[in-house]
Length: 444
Image (cartoon, rainbow, N blue to C red):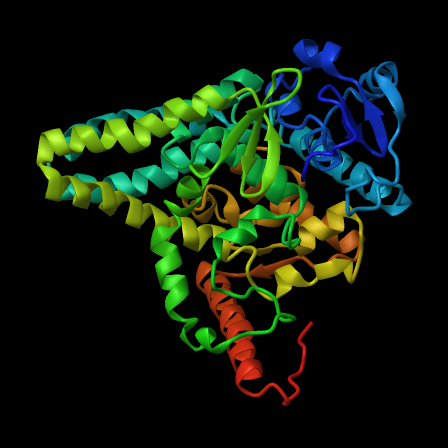
């Protein structure tokens, strides 16, 4: 996740080899942003995920050979996965062929957003503009609706746009994420936190930044607790309503310095990222924390402005917490902690999630595809509108390779699994602190 100090600004590590891709940036089919954001780091995880369904493997191999510089050193090796595992390559080909066969059978020409979903996005944008008029004129109903629209429009745009899952053109995806999704989170930081950190290192402590949002809560069984954790049950409720603001406020604690070659280096939550989108962050921050508050104060007065700024955020935060945390913070999602089962990237991604109602189009829409989290982690640039039909294909793939895909029938069951896990971990931590000499059983 961190930059590799021995690498230059125009060097990338993929599958244990160092490449100089600067001359390739502008002709990269996936656009320049994703390359710039991964300068001076091992980006194998993203390379594997976003090229899994590509039909241009010969072109990719030839291009990499053209820009090859040297093998990585032992000190530069940062990936926790075994990319030389023959089983991983066998599984990757099997998954690619199975998914492609599904699309051919169903006569689906693109795995991006369907026309029906694109039409729905347009309808949501129009609805948001109409709702904004009533919201700025003091309608409490509009304030509540605004919170829901933040999730189904802004969160969806940021999430699927930065995964390049909505449109075929990379620039359209990023533009959609920046324009419609910035109210969810600042686009560049979301890309670093979610696309790079979380999707590369799911549930790996010290690498997955998503684990940093749970301040004061223990997520794993091995940690020791303290007396503070007798009050653990209060924290999820507080975190749920604050989830909408916590990542954004953390984003404001960043530093920006310049590398020797003049490239911006963003220091975010102790991690260095390289990006050329700093000015996007400034504009989005100004819109969120200056323009919107001032407009609300001008239209509604100070007290009502504070209330109207908070209501949509609290509603959005509760929805955001529910759909995002039940999938990864539960006992099954830590099965491969410290790679107890496998260093296979696909196995780790599938074992790092708990899914629910996987064939439901309704829950797929309401959760913006997060009900099929395991599939999303191995096929991030496939739009979630395809997940319900692909779920059976994915189940068969898991069965063929003896991977137990954790699933529940309903969101309620998944939410209970999340709550029970937090309870088990934090109550045990509290009792260990109160009875340091008493041994407690470690659950795996």
